[in-house]
Image (tube, rainbow, N blue to C red; front, side):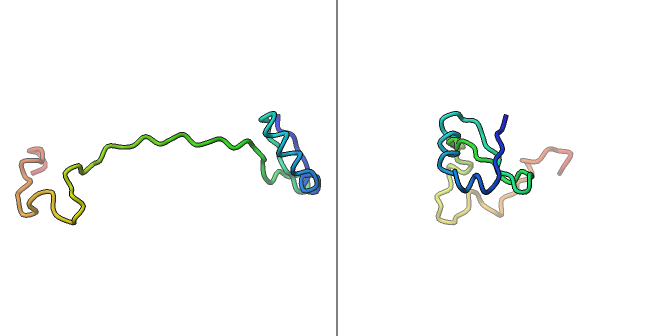
Length: 82
């Protein structure tokens, strides 16, 4: 369960609130006029993203074409779409 504190109390005791959140992992909700405004939560490191395979492994990066742009690509399309 989240603990609630008002803005004045949070401002006055921010270091203590942060320490408690770090130690317990339990979040605090800071309220203004008894309405939730923000939560103080433990920061978690993002997972490393998986590296996707290179979609254009044969592209040299020099701005050239991967194939002849004038070459017909008809045979690559299914018969019903030609």
